[in-house]
Picture: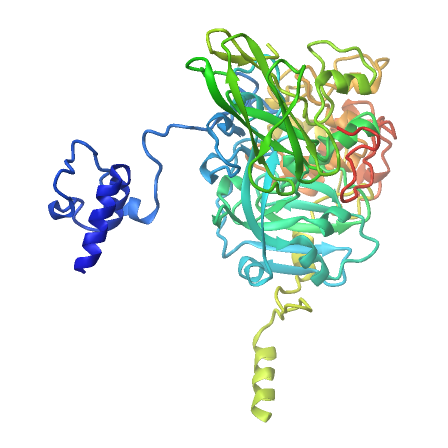
Length: 426
Length: 192
């Protein structure tokens, strides 16, 4: 007991910054007051104010009130939903404040197929039914699924509407409809094998339990490769806005395929052309292919639009790279508007279909310039400029050019003489 | 041995929904009724369509009484919800004619299959009362929207058999998806 207290005091002495957190931990319920004798002499309250403990803080922690990073409706000033009813159905992640590769669940981007409807599902009542071209249709409860062998993987999700243009001010507006979380669940292949998948099955339809029962068609080859029915997100149950209690993960495919509130999977012998599939309708096979699996994409998150460099000197340029084609192999950064490309440092081992953090050491000399990043994935796909995409499709390039499918083109940020950072597409 | 057998029999008799998954012994077999209740995704063959029928005339009345006109406009255009009818002339190519003024595609004109129209009205309409329409009403509303877009004549009755046979103006004029393969680029020869 005595020695315990001594060691705590030593800790308190060694780090004033830690003191607040430790105090909260040490004074469990009731009192609400930090006992006087817990403070070593000289540790005046005024020097290091304490966060008052509460039952809530003990049970479920909270970030500092000095941290104000927030999600926002997407897009800014744009039409809020296809039916213009004014509901916030797209919410963007504050990538400009992100560090590392995991998006906290509270800041994960959100999109729904229509409106702002988030079903309030009792996990005890929720089931996943798998039927269609299988030998044994099966219904699984959440308890059933949690008994099965699990996988835990980092994966990004990105909305097809994550398009950058010259009107956006910040990276949250231009790229905030992507996030990356650690997902835990059961491989869809495990479930389909248990059901006895028939060889005649070429596609599957996944369907949610929300008001429109959002459904999408996807290839069986993808189902057997790496799709997952996920019940866990960043170490706790999937959040309601992200599909509680169960969502489908289709790593690297456009966001809408990651069916939330998953209640049913039907294996079929053709593309079903449900409403969400119809939403992907394109005139040519080339455009259709680009609106399915996401290409290699990266963006510099710091410094990025709306931020301010305090002066010339050293900065680590930091950003995120990801691809639907696999893991990121390399990232290059240009600090002179794309004339010279330099290899960036990749932080930690890149995971397949996951955000990958990169950094590049840069000393700003105070002159106006443009910073850009581009990435290459493990199968050799290279993030293009808009000009390169236009050239491939053999159309004249101008500022209004729209990249077919999900826009994975290079994003420039302009560093102005006064240190302000603005959209290079503006 | 005997008591083990007894215990196993008790287990089998006691649980109506037997564990079915062969490797792990979890999950249970849904009944045909349970499958039918959820089997609402209508594919191009229409095999999931329920019995029922409806015509454009019935659909026109329902379009007003069920609240469709409130959001989509009395004539299915010019209102807050996506357009259901094109303002452009029949001579304009479909991919151009099929886009409403808000930029969204006009479903009952540009869907490659009439089943897609039925499916969406059934699963997603009306806003706020999804799933409240009866099968006959969905057939009738589908008929009305297809008639409105000059896809079928006014007197055609749509049902389980006739709906999947409707020839949509889109025909084959849309891009098919490539076969998906692990580790393959998303578009052969594109490299981006």
